Image (tube, rainbow, N blue to C red; front, top):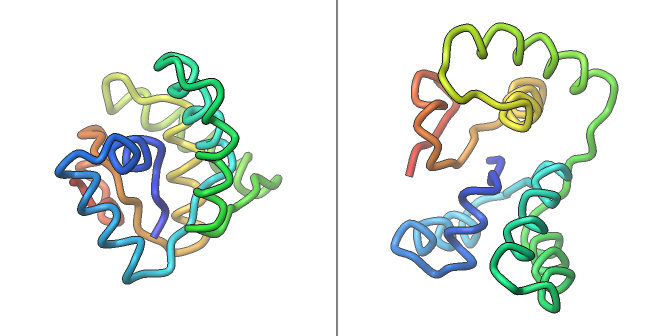
Length: 125
């Protein structure tokens, strides 16, 4: 299962949904797209946690396997982005990278973003 940035942030904030993320991390093999680390870094800076960002990312790397973007993922993400932007309000390129990765690796996506709702491989918290 791919843990998206939203799910990681809920986990870090120790919310009720974050507790569900923790349960999944403990029982399943989990993955994180390396681009999600950029969103988590941004979140850390927005929340005055600059001194903790590297530690947070290191813990994510320990708790999950990092998937690096490659040409196959990048190309599919561009195609997905074109198609989803016409269908789903507020769909973003980062979402397309995560969806492309999940589709190519045959993984589910753990997320709280409602714009993934119509996708068969999305697990919405």
